[in-house]
Length: 253
Length: 352
Image (tube, rainbow over all chains, first blue to last red; front, side, top):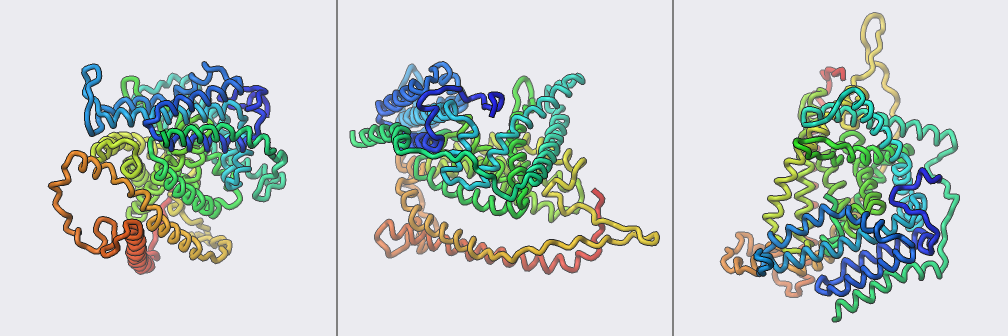
């Protein structure tokens, strides 16, 4: 894949994290998030340690902090929800700055914020250090059904094409003086969506015919089989293993 | 609307993950039946379409705008199985690539936003289309109602998941009211856009709309000045498939979930009960009229071990549900076949 096909979240590099086989990274991130979610929320220090672990990974992968923090903005909707929690939750209340807040609501908000942020940060690091094609190969290695991986790869491969098609339709609408400003214009936008569906579906049929003419018989050949050595596995799993230690400490202390 | 990590506790996330994996597996088989070997490119392109159309902004008023969720649209345009599959793939990719929705919450997200939305929408749509007259307008009307129902249904499903495994004891009644209330408004927008989009596709390529397949007029030949039905193409012989394996697997899964997993799920009382217990509301609670039924409080009378009792109650519950469901299904199917067979003769084809 050329540079033009790399997704926007990917950050090209040659670090040790970039070089790891994709399925080890996927496993590591998933295990890490599972460990984070099962940590008791009262162990505040544990979450600080998790954040430090992720910062270490980001350092090794040479992902700058600014890049990571900008990507974290995606969770703003949940932050809004979490801020609401202390006001609506039940239980004993506590006075903070003249506001009556629920104690369990405060814990709940902290819980969602801490775990959600760590989960997002881990996913962002994964996406920043792994190319799309590699991610799909990794999913295939992890025994996801091949058909599902194929569908996902077609979605990724043609996502930009379809989005571009939508952008061209928008430019065509705007160059004819159309400006969507309210509910009255939904009909026009929906007609565009309908046209987009027809174009996507027909493109799918053409792609299928092209595939058949090249010998497709229901499964894609895998030409770049990825394998991971024991050292690579242990390097990748160092992250969730350390996190597990922290989690166990959090349960016992 | 994507659920982040840490919102739902671990056991319920795992259970939702199992449900989602099962639903995706069933949809994979179903989609292969709907699209055979074209599945990969077509479902992939439709998933890309759903992904793109979620970025299409619909201005509401004064600078605010909404976007389509797409579950109902996908189910109506390409069929329920492919629809579930496409939305699931979109959610999977959003979770892994864009960190939109937590990885551990992927099961919850797929169950609520792909499975519940698409299946509800398609069930409502199919039901209305069979009841309403065979016209193009009834397809759009059904699409409107289906999309309208699907969004609050997803909100209610999320509230149910939250009631079982939420990490904060927000009163569930309030959550339900707020979620369903807000999502009815969203559902109206979703319904309007879905209807207009389905209408636009039907106007150009009615053959592409899965939900409108029954509406295409049969081919006519003019033989000697008279219109005669063209000989229908011989349908490809479908290999006899026994649904027994699927039914048995489903039954076994439900029994395991109800009998074993339910113990862990109900180990901590649900939010409402907990709130009631905390605030002392439940001291005045009148016992339910069914309280002295043999299965009261999800336990079996006369069995003292809580785990065995709860598990047994779950197993009995699954059994009763299966028997009742099968009975209703048989009754409905029997009536349907006896009703439709004589009525199908004077069928006036509708030009779409």
